[in-house]
Length: 427
Ligand code: EPZ
Image (cartoon, rainbow, N blue to C red; front, side, top):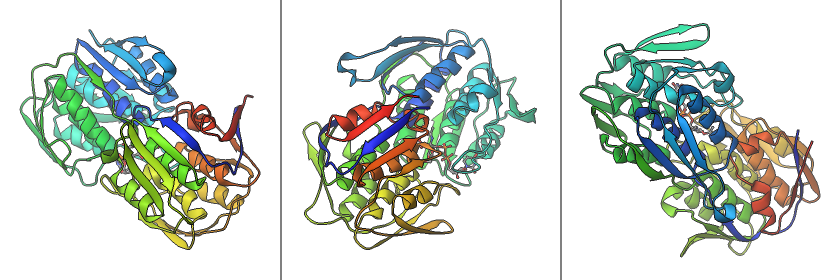
């Protein structure tokens, strides 16, 4: 298994190109199942999860045409996805096990083919992550849902029917699945307490470009009028706000200065506020965002993860690395997932002083971290260790790099172009 080796202590200086958002791209790709015409998606990141979704769609009968490498490798990939006919309606365990976002084919398959068989994802490193909200809401649209041999078997022989759905808690994937189901359902659907994440709005905008009728995009109430059919469209994926936040934290933790090209300020509101509070300067540049540490040391911050527009759970681990070397104490509370502190013992092995009490971590800043052998069990935890390694004295070796490959495109290349001493060791 590949490992990443970092010799820390070098301030990052230069330009980093922000890619398309993985978590926007995955539901957008699933939306191709809703029409027989071509959905052309551009600015897709080069990531393992994107290839997994492409494989799943191909299994279901979607023709996947791709323009692999855009010039310079920075402009993202373009996929032309054409589901002339949906030939299969099963998302097999083998793929869902690899990537939970595979469950996003459930809504569109039910809407277009009136049936779907999707493997239940099961728990993962950050929590139990059930899909009960997706299933209850789809049942409200008239789907008959059974669980059999580890699979969700859903059928709506006469097609789905609009309904008023109130989500008992905010779910990004639940909102996306229901949005894709409702656009072809008969009549009107209201999705109340819907997720407002930019990735959800990106999906809603793409569906609108395909002919769907959706009101309330960007709010917690989405009103959908079902249409007879959707058509093809060309759509560019939004830039990745978590990649943006991660590299902003990298600039801050190394006392460096980066320009994040293509980053959009409106996508990182709360993260930018928190970084500013910690002593980081964020400015708009003609092509993105500039990030540098203000004079002096970083300051401790209090953060609670919440659904958008609150502080994203996908930035919690990275902000903890920053807090680990900030002056004073920080309190970081995780309110979305029940088990998302897997990075804490690893950061402590690098010299951090962190105590977890239930859903909160108290981080007492230390003057510096020391390199160590570390590993993590999820994507964001892994990248928080990269950040810690960039700031630490000495050598850090990060194991289980495949987590990083699921969500950060050409991470070592982007960081080493800005002066980081980082390399991948194959094997
Ligand atoms: C999405 O996951 C993201 N994944 C996650 O990104 C992100 O952490 C999460 O939203 C929260 O922002 C993709 O977009 C592909 P949820 P999702 O449904 O949709 C509970 C990353 O690192 N819940 O909003 O699965 C659930 O257990 C990742 O890129 C139920 O109880 O998240 C969690 O506690 C990981 N029942 C909370 O709701 C359900 O039916 C929020 O989950 C659904 C969710």
